[in-house]
Length: 73
Image 1 (cartoon, one colour):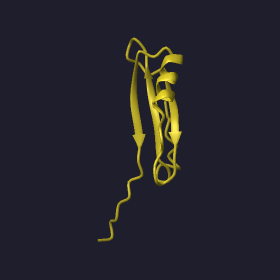
Image 2 (image 1 turned 90 degrees about the vertical axis):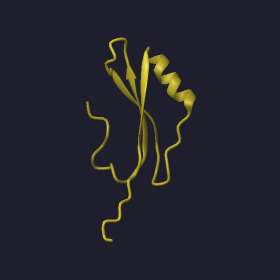
Image 3 (image 1 turned 180 degrees about the vertical axis):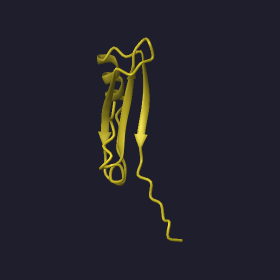
Image 4 (image 1 turned 90 degrees about the horizontal axis):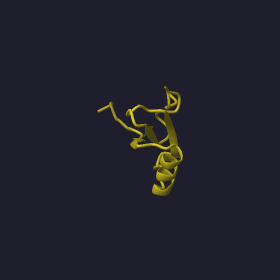
């Protein structure tokens, strides 16, 4: 199950949740928010609403940040 777009990994920040079932399997991934280079905002009400609608018994929060690395020095 691929959730991150490898073509955009370096350009945007993303906040997603992995929804878990009773067997601790991941039946789905929900994208909570997507931002630019300065951040991605997440509303806790949206996180819990998505988990409740999916009848999830657990959630894993995933936040991808932009890693800026200066290798010239």
